[in-house]
Length: 472
Figure (cartoon, rainbow, N blue to C red):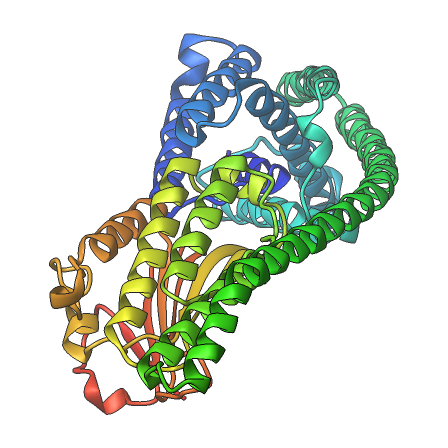
């Protein structure tokens, strides 16, 4: 059970939270207990099929993935797990046959209360889990089984799992009926050969899938280049029109101001006011940059909305989109929750900049995978956090700048989401500078639910078991 759930998780690249892992472990323990009483209620072959079906429903409820994906992925994981179990049994059995003089060991009835059999089955269990982890160390399988998301996978999974269950039933029946041990090993070999066949099939499916993706990516690449050229041309046209409009609107005013200055009828304040208006008009034209797309229209609109707001406040905005954000909202965090997270932290960064007097006014947002997990980071050049504020985050509603619009609701909401998704919260503080960002705030979906403060002033933070202070 543990092996099959692990393979399922890795196959679809599902990021399980700590609470989900605890629930899954309890589920495995429950079925281990039920397995002891199964022979009194039904044949073990029927029990295994029932266990597989009920676990599919359990995984569907727990992970909230699409039902057809859960069925395909878990059936495949269950079949692979059975294959790995009998592979482990085969090799551990061979070792102990040599150690205990073959036939004398084989013909003795299995007594599960004897230490030797406890050792054997413990070694089998450990080897099975080790083999499951090694499967995903294979370079081709490190990113799971993406072909599972195709409709035909459920047919392959059903056939493979059905064959495995039939062979497993025969193996157990022959072993308990006292038939020749070599006949039992022949059926075990059948299980292994079936698993090898499915391994070859999976490799070919992966190869075909990757070839298809390469072709698709090639087509998408040239289509993207074409769209980028179109967008660039459209942007240049828009900027030229903007400059022409601004020049037309200000040219007469500048001529009139020049005449007034020559005649001594214009004050210095009037000249400076006109100059500021002209610079603001040009800044708005330059500020209308095309942001990188997340491929999710609602998120793109959200970033565009904040870009416009920042432009009004004369704040530069930079956006970096890495990897597939579509995968992020389908497998890591719900889209609505992600929107709330983005909006809260971009708003906090804007308030922090407006509350200070740093001439460098800039915000940068980075979203996507970082190393082996997804995260969202906001850099800003605003005022720093108060140490007391960071020390109390997550325990109550606190804010550094209540007098300039801060309410603390955004960070309170963030910590609620951190607990829900077992995500980590990282604050990185830099020494105040007029040419660089003063801090960054990251939400990392790594399943650790840690709170880390990376700072140049570690002595300002009291010791606590709620957070870790790292000096730089």
